[in-house]
Image (cartoon, rainbow, N blue to C red; front, top):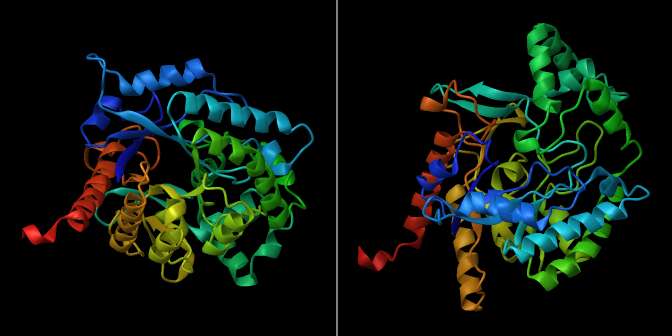
Length: 402
């Protein structure tokens, strides 16, 4: 496997110099300064590439191998009039990346917001901090802060009562922090920051848009992108919706194995693949991650090897667990990915290695109190990478030597 590390650019608190010390060989990055819908100029790609791959001696030893992500414009997701210009720009960005040798692209098709958490500093019993999604806090935001039209129709009477109790127990500062956590944007400008009014407007754009509508818009987008990707040798790796279920009245369409079956039946191109984000998929108890890793092995171009621990009494609530101590069998997942790589090697696939990276590490030790991108502090991710590396080495060992 190719050990990779996400880097948000020169303003990332975790520098390229720091990343070199982790033992990772590949970088996952993007041009966050380019507005959504605009083409990534080749000179900007090469400049960013140089920041990653060159040091004072001319070579950092790191390679920019994976893009996460080229954002998909909301007009594409809504199939609005005039959206073709954004499809063309997306394809042009992909073509420019390919010219620079970067041929694995992670992307998502989530409406309005990217991954969503209610707590960005949830204190664990050991004193470290994790990301958390609390269903009751989320419902309190949806019903009593956002006051989304007809939101109450999506909750039971008991859930509404619980949400009101949660809301009334929060201070004004806690309500403000919860709102910011959900709508104020993500690291590296992965999503735009919204005011409450802007957020309501964005959500209203999807009124009447069904899951099937959104899925067909994804298929329309990919039907134009995939032939170009095949010709360029580019692998597209769609990231699941996070959390993987409908929320805020928005449809979600990449949540389960059944969703992936629909995607690949409609668009069987070899360039049409997935990012196996173990943590995202495993936040649904009905997703069997080792089985999914086996079933979709040939489609996995990239993997986020993290896990979550769900609340026993409320399975929609979870926190980001340590990489090997979650609700799923991470060792079985890694074994399935290694088996897939063996199959690719037997089939003489010269691009058979799967890019993997630690994800959403705990804020811990000397990183506590520092300014960090939520989920992307250095020490916690390095701990995760070390744990994953140990599993890979153990599973890959020639046991006959011992």
